[in-house]
Length: 280
Ligand SMILES: NC(=O)c1ccc[n+]([C@@H]2O[C@H](COP(=O)([O-])OP(=O)(O)OC[C@H]3O[C@@H](n4cnc5c(N)ncnc54)[C@H](OP(=O)(O)O)[C@@H]3O)[C@@H](O)[C@H]2O)c1
Image 1 (cartoon, rainbow, N blue to C red):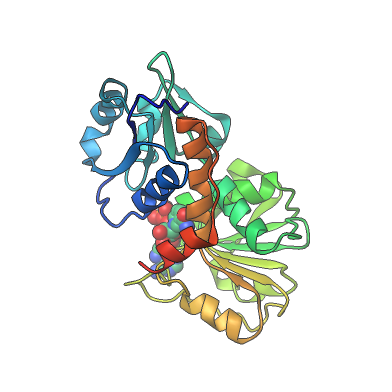
Image 2 (cartoon, protein in one colour):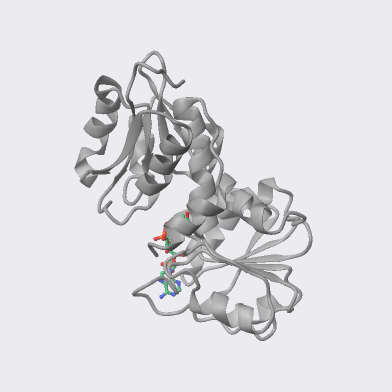
């Protein structure tokens, strides 16, 4: 809860961390809600994550977000792991409870689904087959979010087949692995295509996927947000597909974190989105 007599503190732990847009996001919300507080980037080396998390409570932090490379390793250092975070296998947010104990949650899947609903309010996960490219950390959150939302068929495709097969086995129906070689054909009759690989991100090559067979009404989403329009999204937009980039996922995952730390649920406003877009 927010206290008028206390300076509110939270941050993001990562290595590297200075690229993170989370400070801009949470500091906007402090200001918008008239709260005295700050959210800082915390450069924590991999070996330092345990001590850093234990320092949150004595330093008076309400909690923190976690980014690369801490999302999985932090599981060992919190006192309780929420069900969704356990299923995803990673923590994106830590909250310090009144008794000083730490609870780890994961808001990435929530943020992803909310970002889609914000752009396409009538969107339904069960509208047809969904093709998900990638089987890394981002994919785990997205696939669980889609499955929990009622997706009936998720075709999971990854360059390294064992990772997609393992994830399909772990999550069970509706997720099934499709071979990388069959990725172009797997787009036929899909209602949605999601890129969760790092391909298309600034400094990376574009995703190697021919989208000619994808129906033109299919929604194409990319969780990458730098650049704002990846080569995949540009190609999809130019042939008439509706597209959504990954910025909304980042913005929306912050809302439950801010609420858990400070007792106020903030909004993703057009002004906030524009402010962050201007830095990408
Ligand atoms: N919008 C958001 O809030 C948000 C949240 C999380 C992540 N992201 C973004 O999502 C991307 C992935 O992040 P992550 O945490 O899931 O990373 P990750 O766990 O390292 O997974 C990377 C994924 O990309 C695939 N990949 C890498 N190089 C490839 C290539 N040359 N060809 C085909 N596939 C390739 C990997 O396949 P292999 O298994 O074969 O290596 C794997 O599936 C990053 O760009 C990240 O910034 C955005």
